[in-house]
Image (spheres, rainbow, N blue to C red):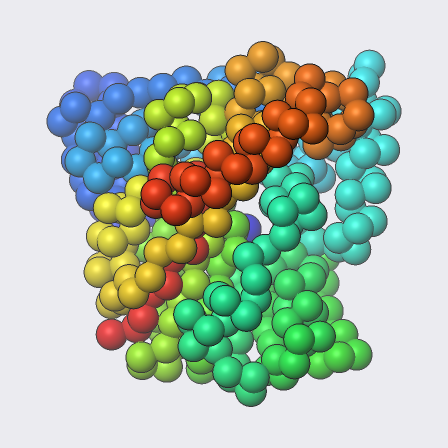
Length: 337
Ligand SMILES: [Zn+2]
């Protein structure tokens, strides 16, 4: 994550237009926008949030950014208190936090990386033209796990920023992680990456403009995000990647093209990297099973409602969707003009 969730910077565009339906924060469209109500299902709070599907650019966005958004992240959830299953859930979260060492914790991000891995580093490093000695910035990096994996793979100049970690971290291997927002960073980088952090940020255009400010001309920003497609059309508000209210923007290719253009980038590549996650999570939400429920495959795979054969079929379906350009997650490669 990055930016300030409380803020709703919108470059002067009105949040509300045409009666009660908010205008699109990326393309400004009002006509024909649809409102959907999605529930908080990671923790199973089931609080309801309005999302607007833009008829102009296809973007899905939260109608208004909650003032108490921090409550819906793990730390806020702890302090909010929880009875009943809370003890079990707290233990689960503690184990997961231990794995991450520090930093803002996103169980879905964790599941994506732990269960499916990030796409082969060699592939995205090649597409983003990242050389071994290039200066790399990871925005919303948490404790810097991915940067440390890059260090192990031979990359040498690695920096991360995340305003939600407890303190700066200087690893022995040279990786540096700063408790800072991208807005407050100076310097010149050869690559700027957002790995499933961009969708949590309140002002995506401003984030891309900061990425551009920090990049050398001709170099790349890599944005890995959930994207609109088959899973949205199939599951609607039960799609696990709506992840209300944490995901503020779920982009379409069109909305990413507009943002990229406005921030001075050209999209050179879109690589779909969705996995079985989209089906497992969404099928569970459709059956009212939260992500952190004891019946959830992510918690107790042995007690899951899915057979191993079904999980394998989900993975095969995801591969098929990726090949068709219709998976629910993708990496966008943006070259600075
Ligand atoms: Zn739009």
